[in-house]
Image (cartoon, rainbow, N blue to C red; front, side):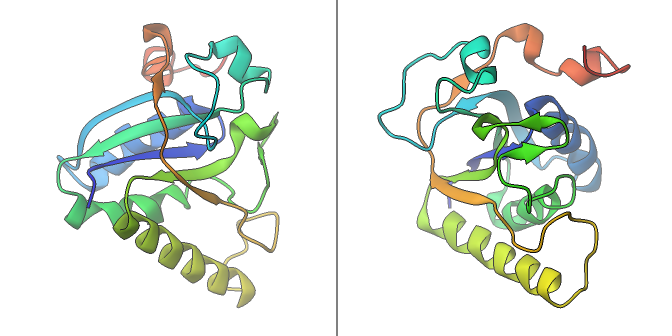
Length: 171
């Protein structure tokens, strides 16, 4: 199984904080590297999109956290389960006030084993929603898209660990 996966869950700063800080606290030494940037579900996507192009929804890219795990066999499924705990996967192309395809709930997988695990976790989550076992989401249908990973474009340095550098929050 690949050690790398890209996660889109709204603004990438929040995704980064939850994974690098909170997931890492739960699973010590699980994250080898993680950085924010952009990935497109379209293999023929525009190259090297700017932050402004992505934020305006003009590039077809999703804001993602590209995560490399130290031990994917041990931590990949846990990471995917955790991913569904910190955002609302039932809102299509929206997280809170952020709306547009660039803020989609999306997982960009690198192989069939990852896809199988992500789809299994989505099915389990949908069963929990259908069975009324969770009420923390706005919708009734998990809208998370699962895509083959494409080229990752790392965001500029000032975007890396933004919420760690700016604990008072967003602009």
